[in-house]
Amino acid sequence: MRLLLLEDEGDLATLVANGLHQAGFSVDRAATLAEAEELTRHFRYDAMVLDRGLPDGDGLSLVRGLRRRQDTTPILVLTARDDLDDRIDGLNRGADDYLVKPFALSEVVARLRALLRRPHSAVDCVLSLGDLAFDPDTRQAEVDGKPISLSVLEGNALEILLRRAGKVVRRTQMEQSLYDSGTVIGSNSLEVLIHRLRRKLDAAGSACAIVTVRGLGYLLQPMPPL
Image (cartoon, rainbow, N blue to C red; front, side):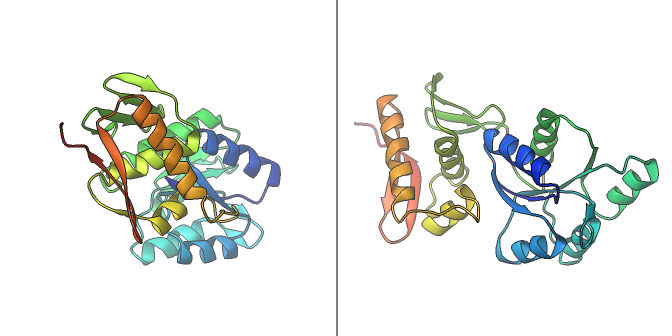
């Protein structure tokens, strides 16, 4: 899951971004409306978290612009504006949820996951294929009911592959979903990540395999029985 975080307070933005990273999200940060608008024109996000009081305007203007373009990306507003009228205004202008500062990071993550479970996001509670299962909420992977330990990036890669099980996930698509826009990606970073994930699935005895489709990307599929 790739998120856009629009927050101009540097320390708070870092705190929220780190918490979202730990929860398994890939996060792009913007400090102004102009930066956020530019990012939304180049990348597709699974959800957005934004402040209202920004140096160049109200964060809700971004929401309004997205909704006019028929963009239904789930949006959570984090703001210090706690008046009832402000909350109603935010929801009426296209935000999906509204959380007032100060807040607990655990609640931000929980609210985002609730938004991503709504029908327009089509995010299942538990993803599975054959003997392999992954819970996006707990970030726990299992093979035949037994937990396996994955890093945050390995879990994110597995989630992407499970959501597209049986279909090729293009390399560029995986890189955009896994890495923030500011991350320097090595030429073989994705190959190394997939190699580590393969080894862990093999060690756990999974009957699912990650297949490399040369020149395209990767697909996850059950291996035929011997």
